[in-house]
Each structure stands twice: as C-alpha cells, then as structure tokens.
Image 1: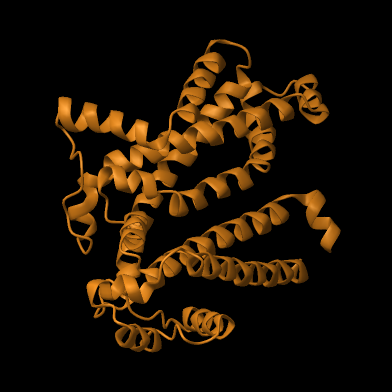
Image 2: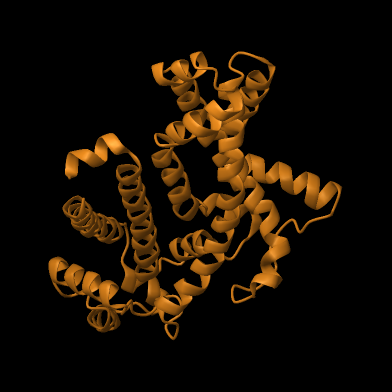
Length: 317
C-alpha cells in the first residue's frame, strides 16, 4: 500500500512536469510577440532587443522552460507583464483564495445534495421521484453555465433584487465582504455539479441493490432502511469517488465562465484578464496551478478508492 501510494505520487509529479511543458509550449506558440505587445508604438529594433533580453526571450526555449518550472517549484513566479511591479505569487494567491472559498461552498452543499438525490432516485427507480430527479438533472446537464448564471442573475439580482447580480468587492476583500456575492455563483456551480454527480450515484445504487449480497440481506429479513444505509450506500459511493473528484477539480479549473458572468474576483477572472493583456507569465502560472490542483484531487481520489475498497487493497498487501 505504501509503495502504491508512493508510486502514484511520483506519477503525479511526472504528469505535472509534462503538463507544465504543454502549458509553456502553448503560450510560447501564441501568435505575436510579447516584447512587441508591451512596447506598442515604441517598438524599435533596439528597444525590442532590450526587452527580449530583460525577459530572457533571447535564450533557448528548453533553458527558459527549466528556469520557469524550477521557479514555480521554489515559489519564484516572477512578475506580471501587465503590472510590472506586481509579483505573480501574491496576486495569484489572493485570487486563488476567493475561488477556493467559492469552490468550498459549492462542494460542501453540492456533494451531499448529489448523494442524497442519487440515492433517492436509485431506490425509487422508474417511479415518480426517479423521473422528477432525472429530468431535473438532465436539464442541469444540458444548460451551459452562463445560461444558468444569467437566469439566476435575472431572477434574484434584477427581478427580485434580493442578491447582488455582480460582484463589486475588490479582490482583496474579506470573506464577510464577498459572502453576499458568492451566493449566485456558488448556486450556479451547485446546479451543474449536482446534475453530473447524482447520475453516477443513481447508477451505482441501482447496481448495488441488484447484487446478490443485498438480496440475501432482504431474504434474512433485514429492513430496507438498514440495508440501504449499511450496505447499499457505502458500496455505491466507491465508484462515485472519482466522479466527485473530477467535479471538485473542475470547480477550480472550470470556473472561468461563472466568474466572468458574475464579475467574481477569482482565479478564472484573473485568467481572462491575463489572456486579454497577453500577460504570459500570469497565464502560465494560473494554468499550472489549475493543473496541479486537478492532478492532486485525482491522486487523492485514487488513493481513497484503494484504501476504501477491500478487494483492491488486498492486491497490494
């Protein structure tokens, strides 16, 4: 078990290294020139050469990538091109905390609701509760995030005017200042993640309820609630761990649309601003942080699945 966990951690680090290479190569292959974009009308050959030397753009690509990745590992992320006096690490950390708060609220509400609705739908298969929950989940899966967010904004922010339609608080605002502005973006994320997770939970519950050991528990006279809570739910949740992990990872990497719709000062909003400013160091930093979080969440899900599944756990003893 220890060796398996160590091997998975090493594999995650190798994956992050190659993902970082793809991110770096992708930003390097973007059309245009960073030095030209920074200088604008003042882009003379002499000034272009000076700026390229300052940004180390005149060095080989492999050498620049290694220096960039090493700097990321040790926390030296450099400075933003659009904000030359602003270090990337504190700027990104400030926005990352805002996104983490939003993701934490969405996950703490969405995951229990998803499990509850999935279990109810699985128990009442092909009956009214299952049909209603399935229709709602299909609607949530079919509508894009910006449509759901726009509808919530229209109803609760404009028509009823009980919640802020957009965020006007600065990025360095406290949790108490941001809290009212988190409700609509978090609700949008909850609707999307519930629609996906409950489908997986429902399928797992149906499969478990048809298994032989559950049927044997019925034959022994065990009441239905006890069968569900003691056997069905723990077993059904194991295949859903990876689906939940992927959804949680998406909360960090896939909130760009939601944060843009609500003008929420998170990492997704920072990414769109950095792309618009052609701030390549900031784009690279946001990309690799999102990739690291995604890989880390999936690593935790794999290890948790192994530890919680006796059949898999015995293979590594």
